[in-house]
Image (cartoon, rainbow, N blue to C red):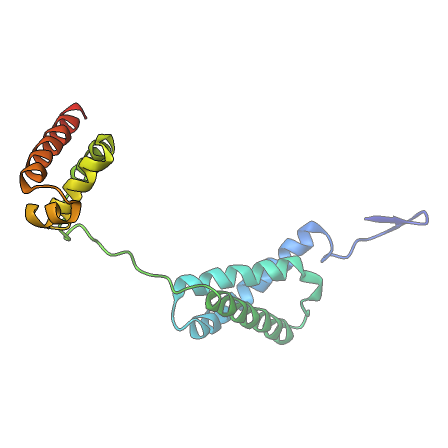
Amino acid sequence: MLLVTGDIVPREPERSPAGRAERMTALHADHARAVLRLLLVLTRGQRQSAEDLLQETMLRAWRHLDAVPAEPDAARRWLFTVARRLVVDRVRLQRGRPDEVQLVDMTWIPAGEDTTGAALASYAIRDALDRLSPAQRRLLCEVYLVGRSPAEVAGRLGVPIGTVKSRTHYALRALRTGLQAA
């Protein structure tokens, strides 16, 4: 009941909480199945999506109950319009997102080899090479990385072959010691 200028005026049944609940219950009972059928068609048979959209349609009807026409056919058309617009909104939203991908069971794929050991060895070798003198490091690179023979290295450095061999020996020994320390 409302008090207007001292007079008691009965509240409209639809505006009272009980009247709103009663109207919403009647709307749901009268139109939910038809709206669900429409949504199943619009969602191409995806029942879960159709049910979600039906729930959202009824929620919009509850929020805007004053806008829902009182006449049953007009109310149904109003609900159909809301449902159709919700489907359009959902389609637009999904177009803006990448397609959902089903997770694949990848346990059947054999595990690759563990490269941790190789990475650690690589770091240890790099550290041991950094501890060598620049001349020793250059000599080992020429012989083992570039693949030049001791004679070629001797010619490039302008030293005898025996000197290249002995320096290579001492450089390898220093490298080995550095690796053992690491």
